[in-house]
Every structure is written in C-alpha cells, then in structure tokens.
Image 1: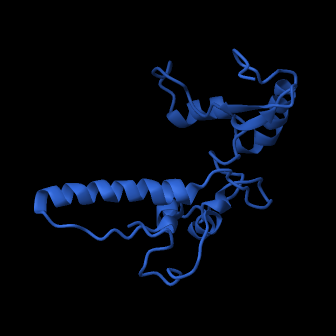
Image 2: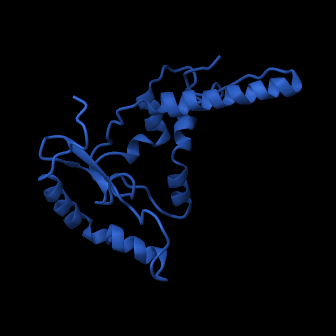
Length: 181
C-alpha cells in the first residue's frame, strides 16, 4: 500500500500533509514565480503526481519484477517530498557547482525573455519557448555558447528584450489554428 505521507522513517511521517507542503519542503515551490516576489502556485499537484504516483508506480513495477524473479514480495515506502526533490536534479547539480537558484532568474523559470509567457491582444496568453538553435548543425565553427547568446541574448538585456516581445505579442491574438471554444 502506498503511504501518502512522507516516508515512514522521516521526522514528519506522522503529520498530515498536502501537495503544496511537500513541494515547499522539497524546494520545488521556491523555483517558480516572479523574481523578487512570492513563489508561484504551480496549478498542478506536483508531489502527488510526479512525487508520489510516478515513483509509486515505478516502485510497484520494480516489486513485481522482483517477485517474479525471487518469489518474494516487497515493502514500498514512497516519499512524495523526496519524489518532488528528484525533479530538482539539475538545480541540485548547479548548487554543487556553487550556483544559487534564484526564482524568476533561471533559464527555465522566467529568467530568459525568449522562454516566457506573454499576454496577447485577445487577453489570452502565448508561450514562447525558444532557448537554443532548434535543429541542424552550426553554420560556422563558433562555440555553442556564442550561438546561444545570439539566440537568447545577454543576461543584462533580458528586461529590454522582454519588453520588446511583450509589445509585439500584445498586437497578436493567441489563437492558433481552430479555436476549440
């Protein structure tokens, strides 16, 4: 049976918990939102789904394979907080290199103007997710870093680029193709 609390050998195992608390403890909540502002609500149950259900299903599959091979069952102890923490693998690696994660300033959480969300003329929103060359080999022997700067822009220019993109997207409708409404 999957336990929807923290792992049973942890200090908070007997406390009631909820997705928001699990992702706050894991540090996932701190990564979203405006730079200098409060953490942003994710809008989906990250710890429930990616932290509990995903790792729970993986553990069940592993236990079934183990039972098939050995004939023995297994006790599964799933931590939704630790499962959510696993989603921060890249950020943990950055921290190991001396970097400090910053809300709204990282490449994938709002720091890049080309990887963001913009309001359109029809009061809907457009997602822009261009952060590197989309395909093919480099046309010149320049470094990958130089190519990235060309597409993404320099860090100190992000606010200016963001304002320019916001002005452009504000003149466009977000509707692409057939409107599902």
